[in-house]
Length: 136
Image (cartoon, rainbow, N blue to C red):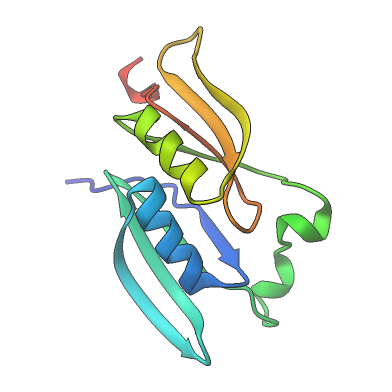
């Protein structure tokens, strides 16, 4: 039996512990695994949201880290993440309260659902909404 998604995004953060806290409190992720690298760094973490997963870790100068660029280093984003939620308005309010930057205000989408786009505390681009593409 297949479990979860076969595509799992991976994101690196300068302050991964703070990112984990923010993502759990604001977006409703649940921490499944955290592997500490010492000195406050995260080697690897897995956050669960519904049947999806986000892997993340601390931005470090290693083989993998040298392949990644944080949004501030490239002047913006080269990708975004879409998170399906049940109560878009509640998540929108939590993003605003937690200091996330709203880029596209919440609205009903013409293709269905309700959503918005924001940046997290380190500038990663997130679209959040109730549109469920698997239902199409």
